[in-house]
Image (cartoon, one colour):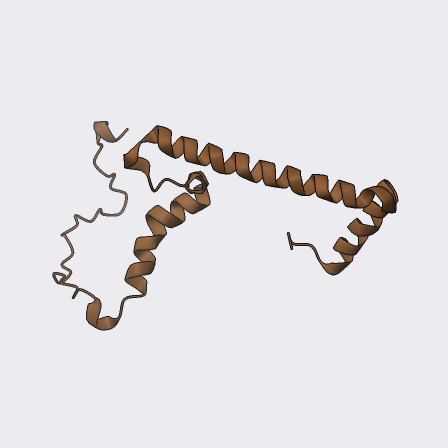
Length: 120
């Protein structure tokens, strides 16, 4: 739960008992639950308002896609994963021309390469 182990949760319960006391602890937990529900409802309303304001073109918009990690995964890596997970009979045959290297003018010892004014 939230990356906490049993020892951390137990320590939080003990601290809560010491801070609020056994009489006010149920009331504080209830108030925390209400606050969490209100925050979740506000976030969902904001997301729905954003989708409605963007129009039907962005009906599948998810604010989590704005996270760079999710953006890269969705727009770049999904295609790679789909290609990677294809069965061999689904793959398109690779048609390539045989490699023929271009002729290269080799420089002799001590010879300077030609100067290209546009490259500098």
